Image (cartoon, rainbow, N blue to C red; front, side):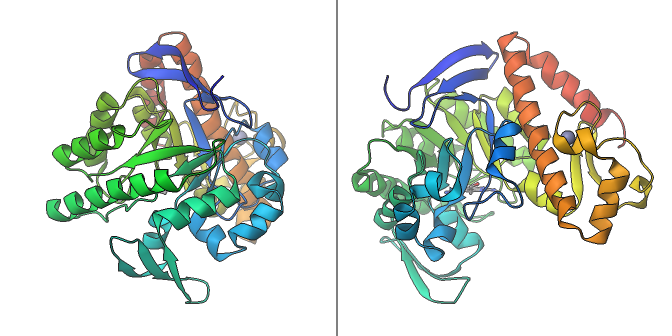
Length: 371
Ligand SMILES: CNc1nc2cc3c(=O)[nH]c(N)nc3c(CCO)c2[nH]1
Ligand SMILES: [Zn+2]
């Protein structure tokens, strides 16, 4: 079987269940990828990530290039051996993180030059170098080196940027040497329908094992983001996985799965967990709020995660107030389990051919009453 074969197993409207083969085992989509930016999902053990249903972890080229460096990761077994997650990994290509973290000094046809956020040293990242780093890190899924334009950007800038990203995709593909890694192209075009369609169609000229919808979840209103997701999945081929980058709120996953998106990643569940909030079907609750200090209930009734099986909201509210590490750990674990249960429920509903009922029931609980 070809190494990254994607089989459609069921459909319900535009929602679909798929099985994606990888050298580290098959995964079922739609799925949510926990973010392990520096090779670790903050505060969580790989065995616990596995226990809650995580399938693919995401790490970042930008961070691991700066520290500890790709060669050290390669000699210590690649991400799988080094970080102890034996399932599939996906690495992002670094461009986005330069914009959001590095101090960008220059972007030109060659690539980007930025100052490291760690020590201010000048670092160059090009399509060729991004691919070389991702090959050393050894992820199963690697991303083409792209530019994610800021929001808002002028149509002129968006057009020039997407054309350069397409030239960088060609260079990324040429630089690739490992047959055991799948390179995804990333479509851009911002929230401009014509440019979005142009970028998606041009990206499709490269026959790739999967395609990412990039350039979104960068501050644009939801009513500008979702038409771009819908437009993208109308153009993208059905027999390839679609990856919507950076999207991780429950309601956004439910909407995007309904539009035919298969893969998601976001720091939201783990970051909001570390900041003291829990995801529930009725919405997010902040355990710093005094109303939880005597609440004997679990974070979420019916949740099977370790936090909900063993602790009350009162205890976790205490941990958060006391600044105990365990507070953020339990909340991160629960929030990831919450999103994995959401995608599990979606896969079951799609298999039943009734994603509409699933989305409706979700919306009722999420928006029906105040938390
Ligand atoms: C949080 N929102 C978000 N939008 C994104 C958009 C992009 C994008 O367009 N390109 C690349 N390479 N990565 C992206 C990432 C990082 C991964 O989540 C994004 N993250
Ligand atoms: Zn839970």
